[in-house]
Length: 189
Length: 189
DNA sequence: TGTATTTTGTGAATTGTTTCACAATAGATC
DNA sequence: GATCTATTGTGAAACAATTCACAAAATACA
Image (cartoon, rainbow over all chains, first blue to last red; front, side):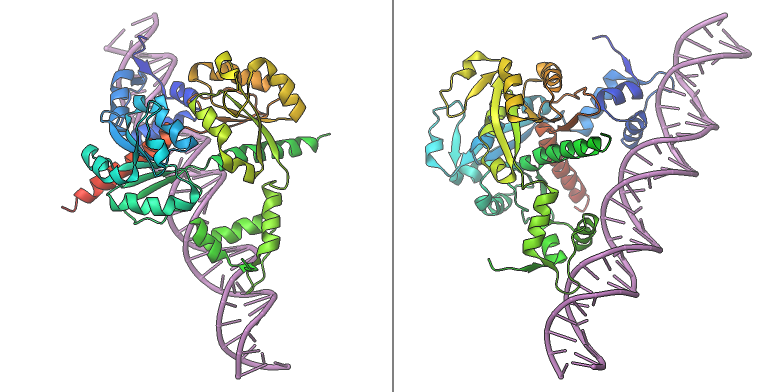
């Protein structure tokens, strides 16, 4: 769009943070701007791409093809962020029949595929009851990072990273905030 | 299961936090335990149910029935947390034909349904391009809280709460952590 | 009833994060 | 080229969250 420079306050406005935060973060990662001239968009984008390793694609697998697993495996936005879903897995043999566009593999092929594609990160969307079991299997196969959508605290070795995403919590937190705002407001009546 | 008392360190272990955090939080909300006896499970559960308003169900709507919207509308775990999805909406008329179990309404019926069910919280899962537009509509109809799954910073009045959930970010953060752990480890070689 | 033990509840200390404030400076203007 | 202006970069200050440390209290047990 022909924009060659941006300022900390421009980016801050778009991102919903303060200009100081933008500058501190950039400075932390060695991104330098010009006093007065702001930041040059081109080099800034390149620097950010390197920091977030968007210059390299990451192969991930989805394990558990229920509602959520299926939606995640079809989520188009991952591609643009270097997230490449190479395969999906489920125990249910019914799901393996590729009536849909996405091939679902049985759990037995996890090892083969993670090795072939050098997968180190898995998205875990299995039912609560089997989450720990499947997690253990993933760790044994060399998975080093797990995005966990089941509401369990997974036990993993220290060298494995887990990021818990709890959709019920996300929605509940909004419900609670709304309730509290209403309660506060009704004090003024 | 016959357990009548729990201790801060038990809960802390299960939740992955420190016992002090558990006690501080309980104390903040007026939950009292017995020195020596720990906390009584029954009264503790009741207190938590009240704090998180799980004693009352909350009616919410899902707007945007793409992959993610559909998965969310079928997500079974919401029910147990007092989150009650009363209706789903989409502009695409093709989706209105209820070939599946879930009825999808056209956007025109949003007002009618939010009013009828007293809905104040919406889950927004529409494409990036229409997110702000749909958001404005929701705010006009009296929605006070939005769980936003599209990667845009929504502009809303101060009295509206927005919780952004960005799935790409969640996965990317794990990819980055794994990469960094590997980098650190290779320093020892 | 008295003593020992366990666990809470919470001030104080520590650590971490965000905001403030302003000197340094690159560029614009005359 | 001298002066003015806008913006960065960053220490210092303010604020927030977490951990520490231990007195207070409830129970257990002799």
